[in-house]
Length: 344
Image (cartoon, rainbow, N blue to C red):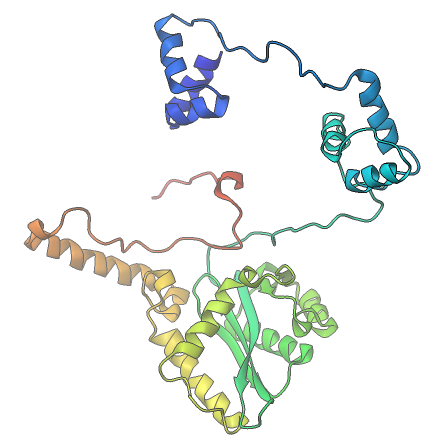
């Protein structure tokens, strides 16, 4: 049976050594079994049970103690010291844990809901205006301790900045107005749009949430105190503040801050060759022109290789268009693979 399972895994693309490791045997054992026409499993477990193994009465005493009224809401780390204070020893903490695990009772032992560290739901952008991400960053003002606040919305698929505003304050009302105007300017279908943000006050303000609900936009949020759940907005702000033209001095006025951001957005959308979308501009990607641009690049490289083939040890650079973009992707092995459709 083991040989059949390993052979099935190998046919599916797994390495035999790795398949053997998964079932708990050495690859040499597989070779010997095949040479013997199947062979026999000569592996042996312990010859005798552990000398100090708990008997059934002792195991039951551990379970009865852990499930008693006095201890049913406590962990073994709390139970064992309390028993010692009562001049009683039944078993160690590790034994309590082992017996509870074997009995299927090693679970949260309290009426309070256990802490859950869940990753945000995966969202997939296969076209523009399907998944947006937004955030707010600080811009220094001439007054020490005072800032201007840059609100910015980016399309995850194309990386295009679809909306931005600079204000002297953070506000859910201003954020809601920005999202509404961005949807109108893009002509996006709000009922098919996911808007991702972190857990800041403007992101979860009542006005913002009510606006998203009224428009039919799906709200998505990062986990509390997790900085990499909103990577596209964070990467955009890093590009903004590390750009050579970013002012070294604070912005003197709100109007000067708005003017600089307006120039940055024009450069970013229309001139910046973004590495995440195969070095085309976000505007070209948003409009679907990236396929033609990348096809021409591929032809340039193909002709160059044809002229001097000795300079190319392998295929030319990959200029194929970037496909779907994942926001907070799940692990590859847990993702349900979509059914491939033929390309005409």
